[in-house]
Structures are given as structure tokens and as C-alpha cells.
Image (cartoon, rainbow, N blue to C red):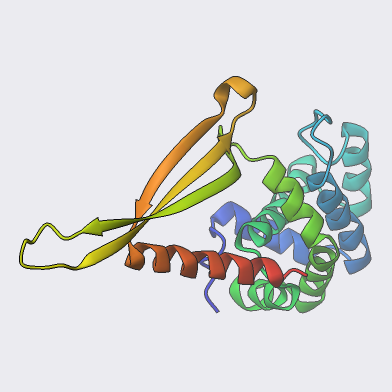
Amino acid sequence: MSSTWIHMTSKFQDGIALINSIEPSKLRLLVNRIALFMQRDLSVKTSSPFTEEEEAKLEKSLDLTTKDVQLVIDSANLILQQAAYHVIKPDILKNKLTEGINLEEERATVIAAVWGANANSIVESLRKRSVLPYQFADITWLLNIEVSSNKKSKLKEPIAVLELSLRGSDDSMNQKVKLEMRKPELQQLYQNLEKIQTQLDALK
């Protein structure tokens, strides 16, 4: 199975090898802590799911160096981040982990189970943390009729005008964007929205 859903680097492969050496019960606790960290409140200003003291305890518990513990955390975090980005169902994630990046089945089962239990909350939390300056707020639309410029033709082509209201980080940044779309463009937009909805439904 293709691993194009995640970027395979030598460092990440080293992280997978380390994860394969961790007892499943300990791995579950570690990955679950990362999953909860990804759902943290926006007011919590911290860059790691573990404190320095907790990482020191992990070193002893997992019998790993400080560098290796951090690599395990980074690798597990990357897996969950990419699962959220691609909106992957738990059973598919398990297959991708075992067949695509050579994670042992028992460890893949643990990560897929943690992902399945936290997927909806993680996706929703990451959505709220959008790094883009604007987020969608509302949409209005109307339908115009454009008469053909060809004098010999009496064809009238419908054109949809969409007005997107975008919400910035403060009221002064709010904007409106108008789009004109003909039928083929609207159909393509609708098909893409259907794909997004299908992926979101897969998490329910």
C-alpha cells in the first residue's frame, strides 16, 4: 500500500523502529497523551504533550535516550496529524501503518484505536487552530443570465454569483469575496464538496 499519505524520511523510519520496540500498553498511554494534547484548549501555551519531568520518566520507563524519546513523540504526533489531515478511518489507518510504513501490527492496532477514539475531537480542534488569516463565515448567492455575444444566437447562459463572507482574527479583518461560476465550474465545486463531506462522514 502506498505511503504517500505521509512523508517517509530516514528520521521518521528510525522513529517507527523505536515505536516497534515499545510495549503496546506503554505505547497506548503515550499516544493517548499526544491525542489529548492535540485537543487542548487554545489558551494553553505549551509546545509539548509532556513536561521535562515526564519525559525523564519516559526515558526510564521505555529505556530510551532523551533524543529517542523525543523522536518517538514526534513520530507518533506526525502519524496522528496526518491521519487528521487526510481524515483516515481507523481500520484504514491500521493498514497504512502496517503495510505502508512497516509498523508492527500490535502497535498499529494501538495507534489506530487511539485515533478512532479521538478522531472527531482532534479534527475539530485542529480546524479551530487554522493558521490562515481568514475563516469561512457565511455565503449568499444569486443567479444571473448572460446573453450570448453572438448576434446569431439567442442562447442565455446562467451564471451563479457567490459571495463568501470571511472572518478574520478581529472585526477589522472581515472581508467579502465574490465569485462568478458557470455550470461546469459549479459542478466541479459541488463534486469537491461531496468528497469533503464523505471524508468527514467517515469519522462519525
